Length: 121
Image 1 (cartoon, rainbow, N blue to C red):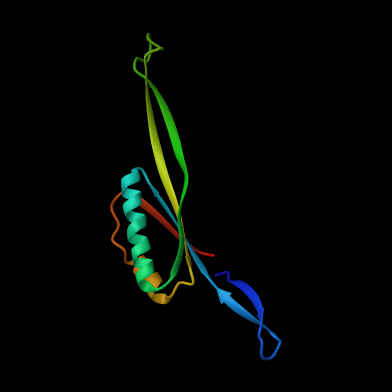
Image 2 (cartoon, rainbow, N blue to C red):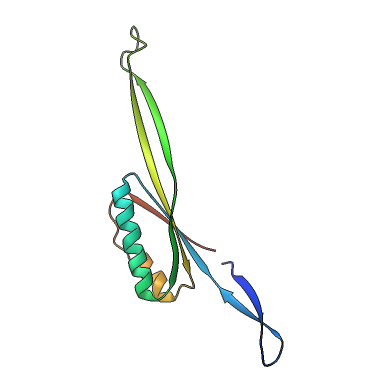
């Protein structure tokens, strides 16, 4: 677990004090943009209820995968079907999380088709 340290001077003693803050980065991926918006809303609601501050959601670029399939394998090479899969992504940073925040994130009931990565920064 990496921690970010900032230094400030204490006004009474003049010595620098170190303040330790941690971040949790949540990456969300889904095929449907409506489902990913509902999921980010539930995550934001649970984090704000637990008392941590939040940065985001930041929409990341949509990943598009295109596939071309031949209809006829031998004679008609120009007859093709094209398919596309879109992966929508969101990024949420949780600043100064508490133990209650981490417990609530691990116990969330999320819809099918949503992938979540949780990392500490």
